[in-house]
Image (cartoon, rainbow, N blue to C red):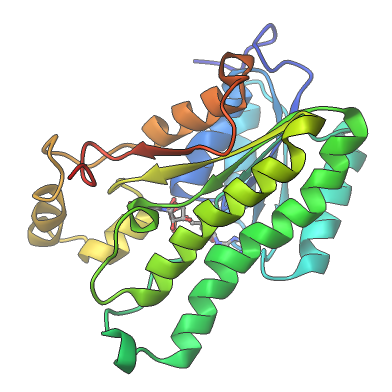
Length: 258
Ligand code: NAI
């Protein structure tokens, strides 16, 4: 499928963090297919440029910017570049994130690892919204989606930092959603289950055995595809979701259904 000149999002601009890989890349491409211009923000270069190139190959418009979401100044500069390139900001997908290096029970969890995960997976989402919201307010309306996780819904044994960060993203999403609902900015979250991305490859060790273990936790008997999260993000940003505010949408094949 190519970028759509008459798509639902023609003339709109989407900012995607973690857009160099996995869920972020799939969502950047999905926005472009709907006609949006896309800013691919990521610490990882040249992979962010590769996503932008893939969008251009579809006939879409994109720029890649190097941005570490833990640095407010980086985020601000990336958003300035967004406005310089495309004149506005309509949608933001705050999705950049990292997985824990290893599992450990809470009392044995290293403080540095706690800080590293909270910094990127939670504080990064806050910093992005802090700088995105004033731009969206300027033009009167828009939508933001933040990436939480199944770990935002249930506790994960041996993963206190990731669980806390992803629960935190949902709380942050709800508070921000209430702050800006009356000003036409809808803020929601997605909670993906096990999704087949480079992150999941690291988590499973990329082995058949590792993958089988993860798949065994999925009632549907498979991992999700990044495109299945992208579709939800694009929908949450659309007018079809105009009454959806502060929602944490679970897209996980039934993994967290109790
Ligand atoms: P991925 O590792 O394939 O992509 C994550 C991207 O974030 C990478 O391009 C990386 O360079 C970027 N990133 C990391 N730190 C950054 C920083 N400080 N500033 C800017 N960019 C940074 O991971 P995947 O699987 O696509 O995950 C995306 C999001 O979805 C993450 O927030 C993750 O926690 C979440 N998630 C993933 C699940 C999965 O099964 N893959 C399940 C539930 C949630």
